[in-house]
Amino acid sequence: MASEDPSVSGVSGRYATALFELARDEKVIDAVKADLDKFSAMLVESPELLRLVRSPVFGAEAQTKALGAVLDKAGIAGISANFLKLLAANRRLFVVADVIGAYRALVARFKGEATADVTVAETLSDKNLEALKLALKSVTGKDVTLNINVDPAIIGGLVVKLGSRMVDSSIRTKLNSIKHAMKEAG
Image 1 (cartoon, rainbow, N blue to C red):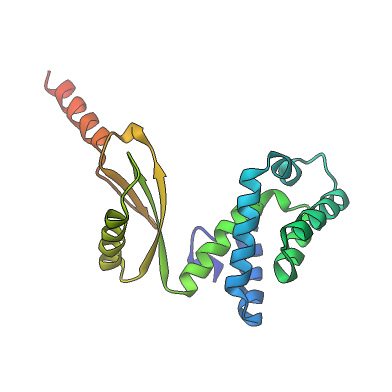
Image 2 (tube, rainbow, N blue to C red):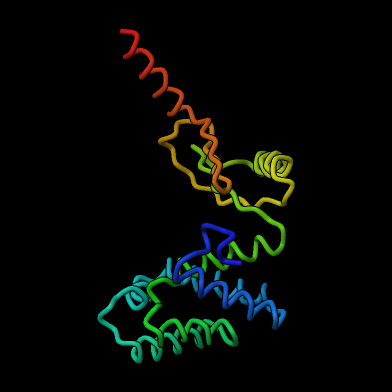
């Protein structure tokens, strides 16, 4: 299964696939995803937790013990907690962000969903978000989850990455194309 999706490969892909298959067998795919999403948010919010996860200074035992306390406090238990502790015990906690991303990709594929990374110059209205989702659904035939990034540097328009495809209709790119064409002509 992991070999079918380029985003699910390597060490993180193997761990994510194992977790996904276990979660599927236990019928807790969404609960595990929710726990992993919560842990991912905790990584973003806590520089100390991120340091614990990434730093090679901490040994497996110290990581596992500290992680256990963090997970208990966050209310993450069961398969998710055991899995994260396994990563720590195996000295693979540093790939947890990649594992979470790969797990999300496996869940999306399982549910027949697609994920698009969309970069916009300013926050889109709900109406525009829905229109974009519908347009992408008509192209893919799947429900599309949007990861929206706001980057004022693109000036206007949007950049959509969906799987291996990318459409860049940003004003920045169009201006760069005009600039390049003018340099060649002049």
